[in-house]
Image (cartoon, rainbow, N blue to C red; front, side, top):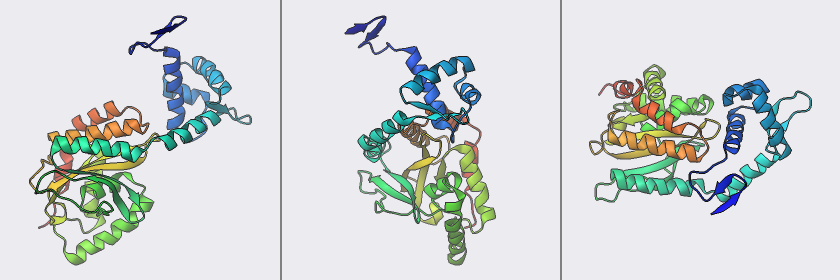
Amino acid sequence: MLKTGKETYGDAQAGIQSIEFAGTILTALLQSDGLQRLSDIAKLAHAPAAKIHRYLVSLARIGLVAQDSATGLYDLGPMALQLGIMGFSRFDALRFAAGMLEQLVDQVGETAALSVWGEHGPKFVRLVEARHGHASTVPVTHICPMTWSATGFLYSAYEDPDRTLPLIRRELEQNKLLRRQKAPRSEAELEPIVKAVRAAGFATVSDGGGGGIAAICAPVFGVTGRLTMALTIFARAGRIDTSADSGVVRLAVNAAARLSETFGFPGTEQTAEAVLSGPGVAKVRRAVRFRT
């Protein structure tokens, strides 16, 4: 065990409060969309402006914070940028997430996948297949339907509408022409589903598009609070409980929250708990009901 001054290193419980508080200030800057006033940072960090200012002076001296000379506003500094670049180059996010998928498949016993937004919609980029003869699977590059899959519903709720709307409108027309069962055929029918997903914090389908697939999808957010990827568990209809209060939903939401935390999204424990206990969960199944 090493000792320096009053701080003890090697004790898992030891720590330096001033460093932890500096991290709170940096997190406040990370969450902002750009240059911030001192008062705004103080509000986000829940501390007096005079205290925040002293920390900002020190953080600026080591390059973690920068102050605009013309406006006096604050932002992340050059060292913060270097740390971000080096951290990104050394951390294989998808490999880490794939390891979590393996754990989830072991727990649930069904297939799990990660998706990111692609040119043609949500695309699976990692998939771990269930280890039994009735496993549901698709190619790793599978594009998820926007209007009748749990993954598509989630992206419809959280992704930028400028990206999603053209694909959604095209699919709705296809649903109408093909008379696709258990799928919305107009924006008016899709709207309550998207609202319910946004309110609940996750998406489920018990028989997506009448294709015999049940699925649960939870969002993974990045440090800026924007959707980074989505985590989906899916199986043949009837093999998983997609009710909003099921244990599988809880596992999916908590796993997605842990991934969000890894990617720098703050407050994931509180977020996951709010999702699982909030009033929105009851709306999900009620919203996904269509003509047969």
